[in-house]
Image (tube, rainbow, N blue to C red; front, side, top):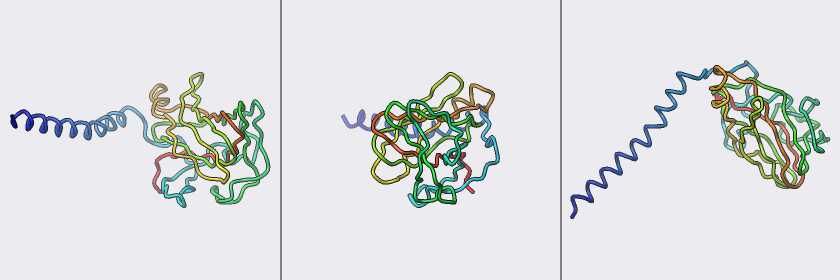
Length: 197
């Protein structure tokens, strides 16, 4: 009776090892197909280090909302006031207000498999949906919940590898933020190109 038990125990160990090793093989295969170099040489910093995120990020185009470069609709608007941490290196004067039903879309930016995630600061009330716009295709990246104080959002995957794989390794995509409920404030939108200093 113990022999089948030992067999099943051994089989579970083999399956666990296969699951552990499989992601490494997939990553290596993807690295052969998709360009892992950043699309541009924008300055990078560690804006979320005070919250334990030591990744290096670059500011999305117009992501500090100090100028009017994002396409706004449905009541989205730039408003005075900024996140208080000076995450871009200096304290800003503006942020983005996203009431329910409104949306804002960034200018296009170059992404490839080296741009896996996005993160920003949020405050106010409600929920904001984050989408990657690749041409006419919308790829959901996550949601952010606003609170009374400015805080960083969770890390959101940009699906850049998917977009890049369909367009010879690089793609021009935009970030789209949509107010789902309440009235949230957003500031300092960053992209992580997986550069580590």
